[in-house]
Image (cartoon, rainbow, N blue to C red; front, side, top):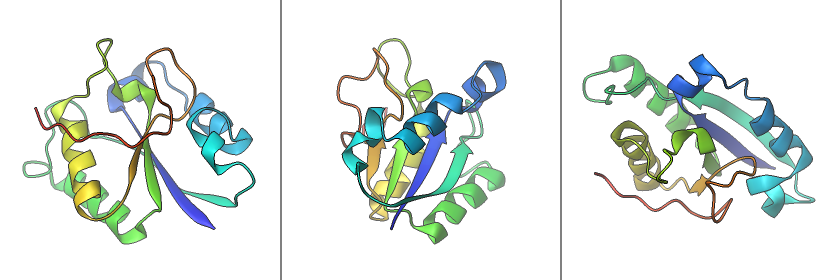
Length: 130
């Protein structure tokens, strides 16, 4: 059984996101989860960043959250479409988290549910620290 974690944006979660589209895509194996068709999956975490400007060095809560994901060591972290800006980039905080997961051997994949912002749902996320 593959363990999957989903990372989304705190600002989006606080404004309009219910998580429903991510969870529906996960359980129905649509969007970025199509690649797991026929596989047994376990959703091990559904978590948010700690907001714009919160980096792991200055935020003990964010570091604790990252450490908990590292302890779970999911087979993949899917980064929600809500973490993308309209120009397709991600903020430094999300990029920092992506970098930590990749450095610890955890694949990070683009997206959860379908969106026009995603050109390749489920593809590996490139790490670009801005």
